[in-house]
Length: 361
Image (tube, rainbow, N blue to C red):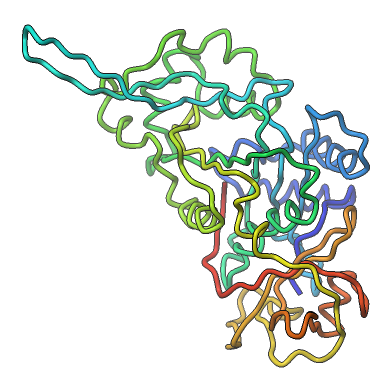
């Protein structure tokens, strides 16, 4: 079975290797062993209730239990902007009019914003290309919402997700080229690296002091404001299906969109249920079960559900065939073992159908 579980200290080498597969723009998952070790330790402190509010965050890995292969990661920051500022551009509209000249213009402004301070953030979603099939990305993305639904009291009222912005074929950002490069005088990757490691003082020192008139930017930069990177389009679709929406905030480096919503409006929070487990042979085989590796074609089955245990430090979630019937969830012995549950244990279940893969956010 392929599961998403809480990260362990022993996962460090596998996580570093996975981070080396990423490209530019994934700010919160860089192949830095020290930074990733610190993040794993921070996640452990958060699970144990020992993290300060400003540093609290969770980190998860996707594992194929048949091979112990770590195929993906994802994370949740509990409250952004409490220690280091959480900057975005807010896209707004300004109107200039002159009755005397009969001139009326409507323009877009980019204003530096702290509006999302205190929001929870889903982040660091990355799935190895080896596993981008059979709805595995859907499991990785939705696992975070299953965790939030199960441990709702650990999170604030609102949630956001910064999505990777558009990059040209040569790996450069038209928005960075038109805006950021002039103010920061370093390349995108250097600025991205500093920001990812909490060294954000240069932003406050060098960022534009006044709103940026988007209409004065080059055409290629204007066109990418709020545009999602092609590799991140499936992730955006998944997040929007969950209930997040673009509401006019974009990333200050690449102008990628920020999606947001009230946590209580998330589909998983509203629709998932907690029921006891019954152990028995499932009626059908799920393609993400043990032995169904990334290269194998899925077998047809009528229905499947996301199933998570209700344990904090040992949290695990995966797809299982079937759904809740007569107030219980039936799992095969292998799936129950992979999810660390026994007969009669409670599990959180969300009925779902085959979903598109998502890759980065």
